[in-house]
Each structure stands twice: as C-alpha cells, then as structure tokens.
Length: 240
Image (cartoon, rainbow, N blue to C red; front, side, top):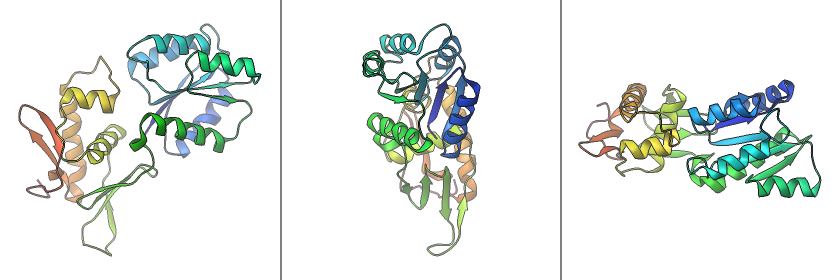
C-alpha cells in the first residue's frame, strides 16, 4: 500500500484528497504546514508527497528544494498542488524539484492518474500488478492476499495482515528466491528510515509468517542464516 504525505493547509481540501486516496487504496498522512511535513518525512519516508505551493511558514517550493538537497530524500517523488496556474509558476515548481505539477481545481481521477504515473516512473513494480507465487496471490489494487486451499475452482481464502507486512510480502513476492539482508529490506520496504533498528525486520517477518499461516504459506518465507530472508517458490513445508 503506497504511503502518500499530503501537505495542505486548507483542511477541507486535505480531507477531500485524503478520502479519495484512501478509497483508491493508498495510506495517507496529513501535514498542515512545512514544519509538520518536515517532521513526517524525518519520521518515515513516504512513497510520494502531494505538496501545496502556498503554505504558512516554509513554502512548498522551499520544502521541495530542501528535500532535493538531502541525499536521504533526493529521490522522493513530489507532485506540486497549487492554484497558481501560470506557465512561469509551473516552471518554478518543476525547477524546485517537483516531478509533476497539478493546478487547482483538479479532478480526483486526474490526481490519481498523476500519482500512479509518477510512482510507476519511480518504482514500476510497486503499483497495480497482481503478483502470484506458489498459489499465493497478492493484489495491490485491492490490498488482498489470497490462496485457494482446495485447488482450482475452490474459494480463495484471505490472509489478514497490516500495511507493513503487506509491503514486505509484496517486495518478497516481486523478488522471489533472492536473499535480502535486513538493511536492504529496511531501505526498500521502510524507505531508508535511519531511526529503525534492523531487528524490527525480524519482528515484522514473524508477523508476516503468522498472517500467512491460515493460508498455508508461512513456509514461503525462509531465514537464510547470517544473510537475511528470502521468499522461496518451493517451500520445504507449506505450513511451516
């Protein structure tokens, strides 16, 4: 589930955008000003920022410039939202580091299309494509993980899990049979968050295995001693 930070000081607009994004399957965090946005990004890197140009205190342009100057946030996808639609304003926003620029008023469909386009450019495998490994099926669009326990034609059973376990499983299933170190998983799944300890990965892998137990898929996640974890397509025991 991609995580979007919405930086917007008009509460009504922020809530409307958040409602549409959540309905489309995104996790949403709100920030009403530049200082709050900086705190949220410092706490955990989002997958994308929707950034209002005219903010109290630090402007959207200043925030974008600051994030682009920091190695940790240099690649952070940013879409600028603003009522300033003149060509010079668009150029300024893009020059500040925005990946795209959307003028108000905008339609929810256009906003979602722009978000998906930017995320595809940044991480092509991370959006709507269904992934399936050893009968386990993950659908990012509906945020469902299912498996047919009775074979073809049987009803699929759901694996219930939290958003972090879902992102972790998605990454494993998108890169099967590869061994991933804890540091690598932190970088790719948590977003290079410098305040998270590597043992956090162990906790979430344990939770992921517990969530996969009811659909007899816990054995897909293997521990590679001294190296990290991998998702295997041929588990030794489907219910391990």
